[in-house]
Amino acid sequence: TPAMLAVAVTDMDAAYAAMAACPVSNSNFNILAGAIGGYSFTAGVYKWGSFVHIASDISIVGGANDLWVFQVAEYISIVAYMRIRLVNDGTGHGTPQASNIVWQVGAYLVLGAYSHLEGNFLVNGYVTFGATSTLNGRV
Image 1 (spheres, one colour):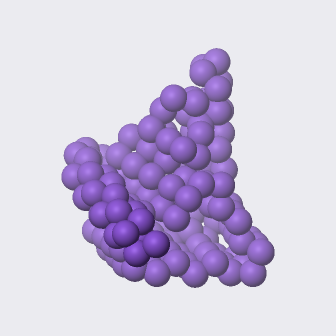
Image 2: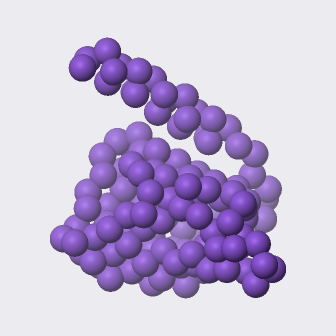
């Protein structure tokens, strides 16, 4: 119904604002100038002032209760066949959970064919999924 849609939009806007407000340390700002392919991310808040481009697999490393927030001012583009991988950090606390990964994106998200994402995406624009690309999470 229109009323339920209005509530959903309001809730998404509130979540988007909350994630955008998370503080980030200088060491987690503009990592690799946005070309993050091949990088491994431990729990924390990461921020890019423009875009993020994933041209090779990235890893989310940690435990089941850790939290990751990725703040991207503009857009995320993911090349075909690339994956976001969840990697256990070996501490005995389990594997990272997609429900504990949030991507706050200012403009849009584009997934290449056969790519795979993990996490919840709050996108202030549009999302394009390439052929047979997959998501473990929500948009």
